[in-house]
Image (cartoon, rainbow, N blue to C red; front, top):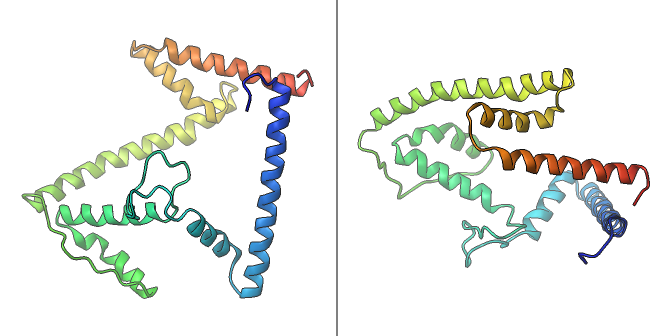
Length: 212
C-alpha cells in the first residue's frame, strides 16, 4: 500500500479487503458445513483438518516437523502440539518422574492411541531433593495465581466500575504506576501510550463525524 494514501483511501482499501475476507470465510464455512453433514461428521473437524493440511510444513527447518522457523507468520498448526508433548516428556524424565504422565498416557490409550517412550534418562543428581524443591515452588505458584486473579478479575473490574479505566486498560495503567512508585524510567512508556490514545481518539472521531 502507498504511504501517500489518505486515511479515507486507507480505510476504503482495508474495507474492501475485509469484505472479501469475510466472504471467503462465509463460503469456506458453507463448504465445511455441507460436507460435514453429508459425511456424517462435525463441522469443526472439517475446519481443523483444513488447517492441518493448509499450514502443513510451514515454518519447518529442513524436513523436521518438530522445528519451527521463528520468522514464519503462519506456521504449521500441528507442530506446536508435538513439540510441547516432546518437551513435557523430556522434562519429566529429566527429573526422574515419568510417572507424572501415566494418567495421561492411560487416557490416550483408552482412545486408541498408545504412546511408548524410550531413550530418555533421569538427569538430576537426586530426584527426591528435586521433587521436594518443586513442591516448595508450587506454594509460591499458588500465591502467584491467586494474586494474578485479584488483579485480572478483581482490580480490573473495580477500575471500570469506578470509571477509572476500561478493564482491558487497567494493567497498562498499573504498569505505569509501578514504574513511577519504584522510581524507574517511564517517560517513553507514558508518551507512547498517550500518543497512541490521541491517534486512536482522532481516528474514531474523524470516522464517526465522516471527516476523512
